Picture 1 (tube, one colour):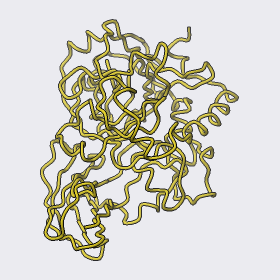
Picture 2 (picture 1 turned 180 degrees about the horizontal axis):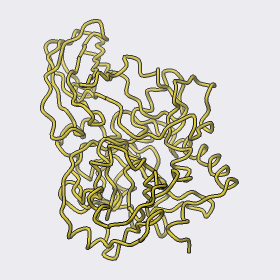
Picture 3 (picture 1 turned 90 degrees about the vertical axis):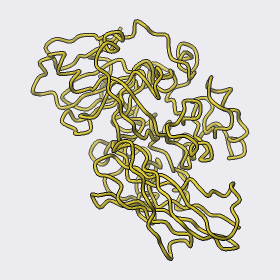
Length: 419
């Protein structure tokens, strides 16, 4: 058995092979071929406890998103409809986490190791006995909105619209105070904290799931070892019994089924950190930068949420009538500064009005907004664009950030409605 310290260590040859395999894997289309087939697949039969009617992108990996008509109904997104994305098939030994039930894992432990003087293990019961804090934050797939990049060139993978997100209340132990209480005597050479999950690759050649964060990252000040989601033990499929939650970070950085915390001199060679879930440092064009061209030198991990807004109503399926209408939606970012403005248009950006923004539950939560508009007979293009206190705003054309894996879409939202 590999020790926790060596579990993610790979030689150059292995890493090269994994990089190629991950490039193919991360770009791999879903196992269904059309939107019609996706919507016809019963999500409730893929993951136990999930509601029917979710949009399935990949049955084998349990990839599914929430229709906005469901998502908009809840302040905190219920486990039954929250989007889902697994990285390995939920078969055999892994079948235990293909459910919204809480896992029965009383002996669960987290190993703290690496460049520390006294490695140790912490039990689930120990975590439960510690002071608990809450974080309300948006959890969002890095591929949320991927389908919109097709306007320039379609990229492979689940063709997410805007339903790969949810607004969730997490509860657990604050990370930094927890680590300080362990009195680990961390070496000066430790620059990275690497989190590893229980989920394992389908083949021995596969890469374990691990993510690394600079130890001094400000976002870690708000991170928690979460034990509860929306007031209940975290469902197995959403990372229970323990999930690392870093508010304001994309979902893949919030490691599910947490088993290890390693202090390391360099970021993990796990393919999910070193070549997968990364964004080019500069804008690229189709054919200029390929899905297998990512390195730690020309790209960066999908850490913090880009500022984003999403229109919740009216949607085309609401069949609105011509005339005055209230337009509603949500906006969010990485929590570094509040959302200060949401502009809304009903004529494709020719004219804009400012929306009224409600006070959010937390810096990382949905900022609900609403605006008055008017729909004309015929085709109407609704748009929304958010801006925060740091001056960051959504590009009107999200295609400026086209990338071969279709990550981090945050273009101004558009909803076409024919009245």
